[in-house]
Length: 399
Image (tube, rainbow, N blue to C red):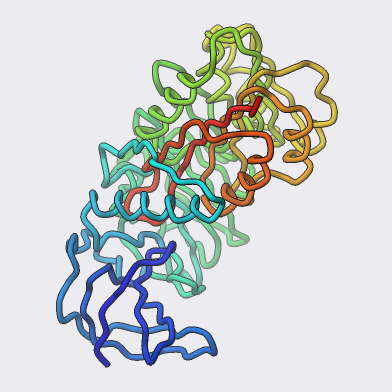
C-alpha cells in the first residue's frame, strides 16, 4: 500500500496512518512517500515495513554506514546533520509543551559527526560479533562502527581471534587514542597481546573485572584538566561535546558558590567549577569512580573539593551544609523520588540538571516546577545521528 510519512516519533521512526490507524514505519523521515507492508496490526497501532521508496522527504541523505538498515544503534543517518538537529529541537519542544513550557533551546552541535564515540559495547552471541538489531536480540555482525573513533575500529577485527563464543567486549579510548579493553565472558579466551600492541596503543585489558594486562584505567584530558578513568567508571562517550558541556555548566555557576554535585562520577563537573567556588562536594556510588575523583582533584591541584562514596538517595538525608547550587547528572532513570523530595524541601537557589533522557527529565521537571522556573535550556548533540539528546536545564528558585 502507498503512504506518506506525516511526522517522526521521538524514537526516530516515521508515522503515517493506514485506514485511520497510526502506523509506525522505521527508517523513514518526514515527507517520504513509500510503499509498505504491515508487519504487525494491533488494536491501536500498526507497525509497517517499507518495500519501496517512491520519493524521499526533504533533508534526506544516504546513510554512511553499511550496517544502518539493520543495526539498532543509529536512527537518523537518513537525515542531513542539520535536519537531525532540527528534529531533536522539535522533539524537545514537544516534550516541554506537555508541562506547559514553551522553550527555545540553545543548541551545541557536534563538530565531528562521524568517528566521535570513545566507547563501544560489542555483543558476542554464538561467535557472532556486533550490535543487537532494533528491538531484538538478533546480532548484526559488524566490521567497524561509523560513529566510533578510528583507533577503536582498529581493534574490532582482532576480536574474532579471541575464542569468545558468548559474551561482551567493551572498547574505550582517550584523547591520545590509547585503548582499554574490557571483556566479560565465561569462555576461555586466547588473546594475542603483542599482535594488538603492534596495531594500537594498548594500555590495558580487563577480563571479568580482573586486570590481565597493563592497567585497568586510562587518563583523559578535557579542557586542560586531567582525569583518571577506571574501566568501570562513567565518562561521556563524546569527548568533544563533553568539553563544551563542562564549560557551559561551569559558566552557569555563580562565583563563590557552595556546590553539591550529585552522581559526580570521576569529578568532571566538580573540577570544572572548583576554581570559582567556595566548596564543592561530589557524591557517587561507584567505588572506583570516587577513587578516581579524589586523585583527579590532586592531579588538577584543587583543594576545595571533597568526594563522598555513597548512594545519592541515602546520602541526601546527611546533608548539613547549606549548598547554594546543586549539579545533578542522574542515570537515564532520572532523579530518585527521595532525592527529588529533598531538592524541593532544601530549595537550593540554583539547580543545574544534566539529563541524557528527555522523558525522565520532563517527569522530574513537572515536580520541580512547584519551586523552580526554567532559566535556560541547552541541547548538546552528544549522540549524533541517534534520537538521543543530552539536555541541560538551569533552574532558578522562585522567590
